[in-house]
Amino acid sequence: MKILIIDPQFFVRAGLIQLITSYSSNVAIYEAASFSVAQDYLAGDGDYNIIFVELQLPDGEIRPVLQRLKKSAPQAHVVLFTWRKPVTDIRQSLAAGARSYLPKDSTAEEAKLAIRAILNGDRYLPDEPQLSEVSASQGGAENFLSPRQLEIMQLLAQGLSNKEIANILGITEGTIRVHLSAIFKAIKVSNRTEATLWYLLRQKKLVS
Image (cartoon, rainbow, N blue to C red):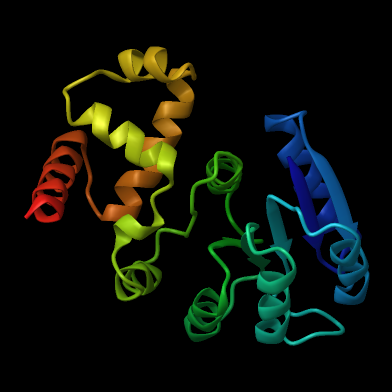
């Protein structure tokens, strides 16, 4: 997995790298203190899986930066990694191409949950009503479930336990719990029963 971190602050980059590598050793992480440095990386190879980007870069406005990232690394999961900003700024960045948003002032537990979700390919947004509204307005929460999450939902709807799903997919129960937490937040439910009902109703609509 290739990760690019675009942030002007060394200690912030170092802290993020430490958190990422505590969950996965199979990563190649590249650092850019400015967007111009990031562009050099992207020009050489745009095949990045995840890109963390600060909203306020010294040499680039966020919307043009996101447009360039989308063009140079179209498959990358772009994470807005910044200090908490007005929700209008975050909304605009999400609409411009950022997929996830991780505030730098998140609690330790929030940061751990976010990184685990992002490394698993899932979208992460803080538990804030205004941002949930953004997800809903962008075409439906189900559009933000990864193929793995949809696979888990299919097995969940069959009444399987976390352990049974983990055995079928060849992953740990802990990973299943992380996925379910992200799923519940994305589709705005609070438990397995509600999630199963959501999935079955969605399948019925697709068939009809």
